Length: 466
Image (cartoon, rainbow, N blue to C red; front, side):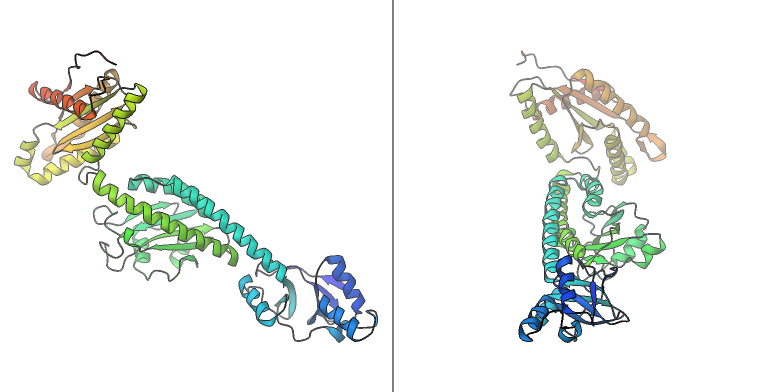
């Protein structure tokens, strides 16, 4: 009697096992192999325990060497009794090594003396091809990720990652912990997360531990389990120079890392793909965070959080070029804190810096989405307003001025106001962005002369537009 047993192995692409009684004739085994398109059977005794393995080669050898027909020979006479086998949790790669070491093409999977599956050389090849295709698919997926996260600004990069990382790994929760002060705020680590219940202190405790020797799937940390996390878990340490290594960390020995949980169940084969993805993503993060560091140094004003003057000059040049190509106008507004020297002289430069920080916060929150506020120098801020005419620029800047009047405060609740000047591009090719800034600056000083806390529009250039 030939039987097919259920399969409980997790070793990989394992075929359900076909068995045959050791007392059955070889002819019956041959018919079973042909009918089921297999090259081997597990031989069992009357109790169902495995006692050997019978292959097509065994049948061919017995029929040619013994001079007997297949109906005359019993399975027990020709089967291999000293069977090499593996446990159900054996990785497919290890099973492949076992078959190669013993020169065999079929390997039973045995659990507590009972055969639960069979791995063949063909199965191993299929697994390898499947993994190779999975790796190719992963590379294409990571290539799409790379093209979508090329953001020079750190926060923009983090926001983009929040959308893209779950897609790549199928993670339900993740946290990115950046220990380096190059990316931190006020000496604290920078944490970006999605659905992660761990607080900064818990993540800091994890950052203070020894980084994993090899990144990839790991056991779910006890801390995460206590907070209700479930599913597969993986970490990726970020200790490359781009992340600052251990330099500038809040605490000696801290390291930056990406932690994910709620991953799909990780098998030996999917673990290989996961490690491959993690390695590729680590390279992408290395490059992008290094670029974010350089961008922050050159293009972000550290005090106000606004664009730096260099970033403004590049944006003006680009907008001027675009305006020439498409005939679109633009405006520039210049804002200056009223009586700023008096604030510094009365309360000290630290208070003056605090006012400038407030100024940056209000402008970042209150400016239109496509406008570009930037610190021009000292207490003076420029706002580039793309594709905007004067009739659109004036009400937008007036709203900002009123908001600043209500929200900027010196010690004791003293209101702080700003004066503003606006200039519109003339439409002439030689009217550069820098020239528009100069006219807006002149209008700003006119606002100062007229009593401050007001908006003045620059006189247009008295020439014919293109």
